[in-house]
Image 1: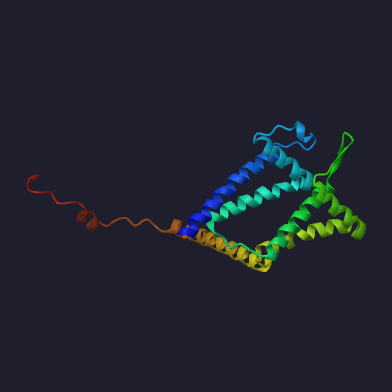
Image 2 (image 1 turned 90 degrees about the horizontal axis):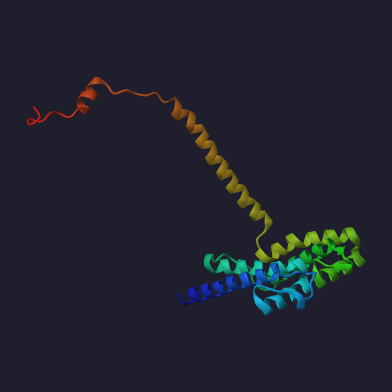
Length: 209
């Protein structure tokens, strides 16, 4: 259908952008100036890597992952959440990821490396001044499951029930196989009787006689 080929065309484009984006980020060195960078995907890749590392740090890898998920969904067509809850979930995941990366930033050669970028640094600064260091970690960790819940719009109770049901089915099938194995081993071998053996021998034809 028309809608299907359009969806798959968008998926192919998203997968191509995923590869380009991933190479741009992987080849970027945060310690070097953008003018000193050499990217396998050219000046555009250099600019892209510099901008996203400056803004989001290592959390910038969430963007190519989102492109990968979108590209694969174009072929499998899973249920995807839309609207402001999904956008809010993405924002929460981005904030929590940049904040956690910023918390792990270190000092190297008198250069402050913020692994969470400008966004992560700002988030950690605001949370630390309001809820303290421990509260900052709690808020950032809490934002991950909340963001996933808004993105998928699937209650965790439903996911737990599905996983439990699949686990029970798997264990149940395994137990049935284990119970059937001794029964098959204990079945005696029944040799054919003389009459059955005689019947199983084909008669000689006249030509053979």
